[in-house]
Length: 243
Image 1 (cartoon, helix red, strand yellow):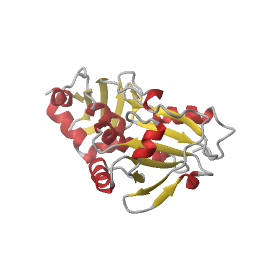
Image 2 (cartoon, one colour):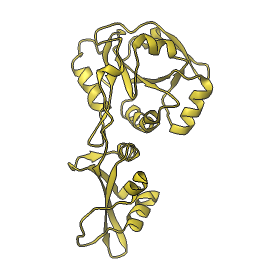
Image 3 (tube, one colour):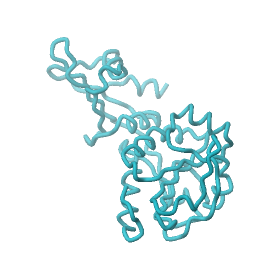
Image 4 (tube, helix red, strand yellow):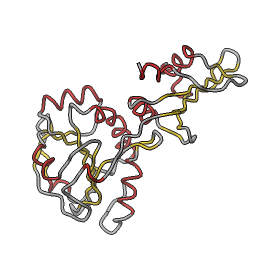
């Protein structure tokens, strides 16, 4: 009931040219025709991507929709995240490795049989994202990881899961994940001490760990972008290519 209430509750004040009915606002926001006219923001009026907004709503957010009309024409739709839960991040989600350490050796495969090992990471900055098919936050994170990867094509990104190939296929279908996912990574999870999600390890071109830990949300914004940039800024001597 809470999520249904969150999806329908509209709190925008009435103003000239604005229409604020539940039916109209939700219908227009869901119509792909109006996607170019739709903007998302948090309560601080900071811009959110659609992926960030949808993830925040899945965590129990409440929205406000303001539809600007001129006669029968829709001029714009402003969707504001007015309340939300902030799933926490923290270094304790990856407990056994810290910045400065060398990434342990590994050899894993994608569900389609492509082999990836540690040696293949040398020479490029690499982001490792940890996931599980039974992890609901991982499914919510997938579109955000896709968008992050599209913005940073020079950054090598892999998702890792302890699931087998079948579980990985099911996760990819359910979440829409587009980055390569390495399967049967249970032993690497144990070695690194992965204890929760969403969690990440950022690896430099020399295979040294630049950062490791969980990444959460703040005011609806997923913290991965800031987390990666802070790690790169603190390790410029080790990073050959800025993503």
